[in-house]
Amino acid sequence: MTEPGTADHDAPRPLVLLLHGPNLNLLGTREPEVYGTATLDDHVASATAAADRHGLDVEAHQTNHEGELVELIHGARGRCAAIVINPGAFTHYAWSIHDALAAFDGVVVEVHLSNPNAREPWRHTSVIAPVATGTIAGFGGLGYALAMQAVAARLTAR
Ligand code: DQA
View 1 (tube, helix red, strand yellow):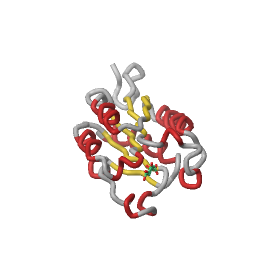
View 2 (tube, helix red, strand yellow):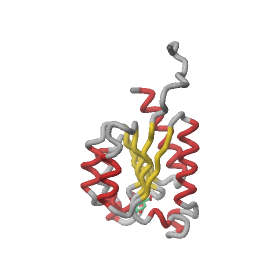
View 3 (tube, protein in one colour):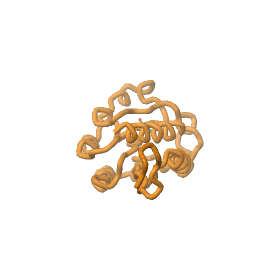
View 4 (cartoon, protein in one colour):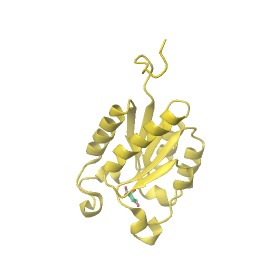
């Protein structure tokens, strides 16, 4: 039995689903002046290391297909404690991803490397933000570590 205030080292660690949408597989060479030179693998590695420091496990996927993201979100139901998602351009119009996230009963963090609100007007709308616990944008790859910290804080507060 676990004493109050002590960690249960046998308890399974909460699982965070880390999702990336379209064109993010090109990170490293895609518009480096906007998105930096770190690759998607670099971001997944630093997100996973940050999650580990907070006692969280990570399962990561990237897809260029909207329906595949919807199915990955469905697969998180009842299995994952949180979803950290950079939906790429789907952020701005993919209501199917909004609806899938609305049906997920856990913490949702929307992450953007750039700050879409400081860019073209069509990027100023996020259809994901209304169903996210919170959004982190404009801090480059640091956003993923901040997202994992936010997930851990939210799960502890529950
Ligand atoms: C992005 C911002 C989106 O507007 C854009 O379509 C992306 C990347 C970001 O991480 O800054 O693909 O989500």
